[in-house]
Image (cartoon, rainbow, N blue to C red; front, side, top):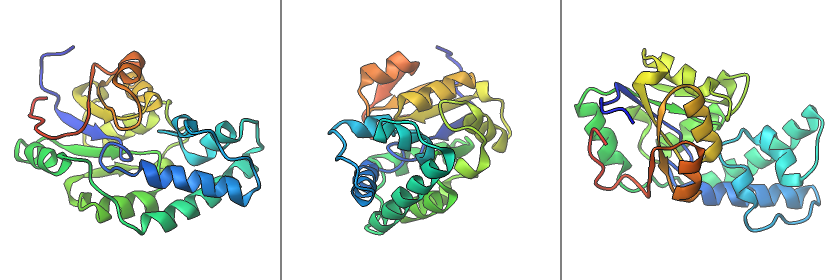
Length: 217
């Protein structure tokens, strides 16, 4: 682990900045009902965390799909999520204070998410967090989703830094793998996966939320 404070910080969104897992789980189940598929097992959502919806659809259904069909079902899921998200997004505990601390220290901040731009803009605005970020990289900005490192490489470039100069906060093993693949340090956020799972994926440690987190962390 480096003892030098990172020059920038990149955050995943769902499960890191906002506690939106419940909306996503309900949206997936609604999509399955719409298409007459069996209800997914209780832990199915672990397969979806950190992945673009069109890449997660075959995992949820347990079978291969043509790309067009996967994208069609992903749109159904996204429509349900948009409906559910109108209930509002709740910021993860302590994140507002931590972002203020980073801003006061002059540390640039970015978001790297597998969500669509429309979803990201709405979620960040609802949670009162949008103004804290110079850059938001979404699924429309990349060719390959997590665990490919592309989204994190672009987020670092967006704030003018090399990936190795950035610290990432991630809640999903595929996201941890993406950030580590970009050469970044990672702290896990254990909102969707256990500390053990996140550390096994490459996180140097994991936190429950941002309450009381200092800088450097």
